[in-house]
Length: 208
Image (cartoon, rainbow, N blue to C red; front, side):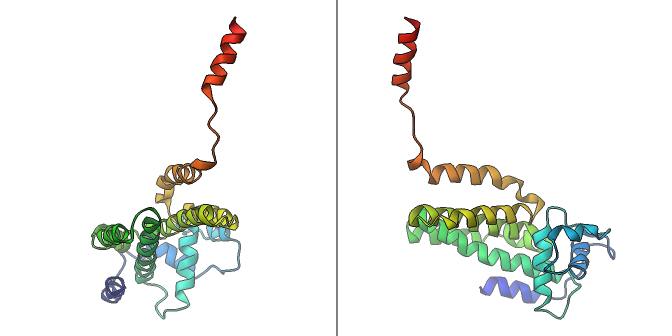
């Protein structure tokens, strides 16, 4: 909590990394000021300069964030949302690991993530991948709890979260294989493995 909100404070006067209206970050922030929350998400693509392709939910969450800040045009909105997303991701990371291992191991790996420079560098330069990561981790956590609690609504929640993840960042293309193998891993006890000896005997019988 201290690390993330200290960085939010230290970056409050940050400017965009390029000339006016040339960076994707600025175009997304400008578009967020033009859209309405209750409009169909793809309506934002009718804005000519908009660069929210595969980042629709990033733009929507930027819009939500503008309701809680007086500065609605600076790059600090992108950094703030990225750091808040990373803060939530670190908690989800701990909860997921805690379901697999002991609390001590989950804490050690979570602290390793929190003390790495990479998440904060990403938050400052291209933070939308953090929002995608948050919803990906949330989908995995829902999947875990759906198996353990037999609450089937969590399967729907997991699918919804992974879908939002795909439309939060163009970097989310690395998540489908991980999600698929996680799904297989969590449901491994429910798969029926055929008896290949039985099929082999029947094939031999047919050949004879």
